[in-house]
Length: 324
Image 1 (cartoon, one colour):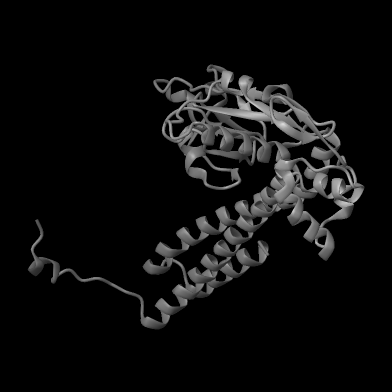
Image 2: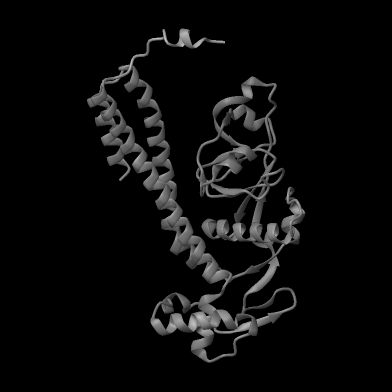
């Protein structure tokens, strides 16, 4: 080991205190913008998820219309109806958005009371399931190319609405010589095996994928509705496991999963309402990636003196202006 006496003889070079403060200010400005983007994205996605729950889980617009029409309210919605009566009374209910929704409920054997004219079916009735694969690792010519390739690790550790970067890349040859496929941008992707089964995100660009995940795309093309819809489905599947280990999702899982199918004009409306938010989230994530790389590049160069502080200030100022 190294003795303390030896460590005391090691000479370290530090920038002068004024320079250290300038460096901290430069890096701090980048960190502030990164944090601002993170908070904004959390708020935007949260608002989209709240709207989905209001429309397609709690049926708030339907209850509002039922109340206004004087139609009977099923007992299971009585508590929610009281909340909605208050919203109608104080003007916080969105009456314009409620217009396309029905003003009655229908009783079903499979799911109890559901909005009138809505249907029940398999998730795969409305969604396309996409699978992937892995090029041979023994073939170096298949790897480190220009095609991003996502694994369960990438998806499970993403923690954001969109995955835009992957740990590994493959070549076009690797793509063509394996079962992997390029999954289109805005597909929802879920981990299907292992301890992180059920973790999900959307692909923020066209990305190839391995066999431990499934990609999902609604046939209607309403990708952001599809993301929220899929998230709700997976959450329900995890809850239905009742404490059991939920470590596998198969095609049968989706085939046997009964979901509520809202009319397409309503899912179209949700897509119109939330698309700007999700597009902004994706833009912010790209900006954050750029700022993070710049911050991590500047630090060692500033400490070593390779980069002058005024030059770094200009780079940081320009980068933060570009993302405002």
